[in-house]
Length: 132
Image (cartoon, rainbow, N blue to C red; front, side, top):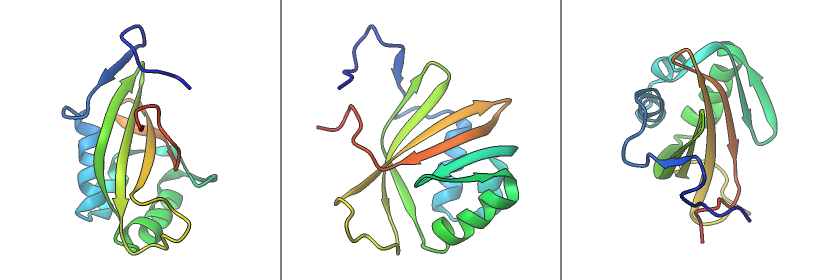
């Protein structure tokens, strides 16, 4: 298991999210589908549960069904910058099927940003190094 230490290039940004990521999360929770999709690059790749969605149209269709349709909200538990990537661990809730999921459900969001937009977002249900 990887342990976080001062030697790693990891910066805790839990209480100081970059504007783009804060805007993305606010649009996710509000909900505001137009503001949400505006945080992505036109050719962005999103991977959720080992399913890939590329570009605004595909990401919007995914979000309309699985984020906004299920009234999913996210609450940041921990966030850090690792070199050029932003990692957010968030407690999620909503009207989705929670059977066989841990309680609470904490997802890891791995953001890659380029030119002020989300170029790639990978969402995983995993056990992070910061979780005990």
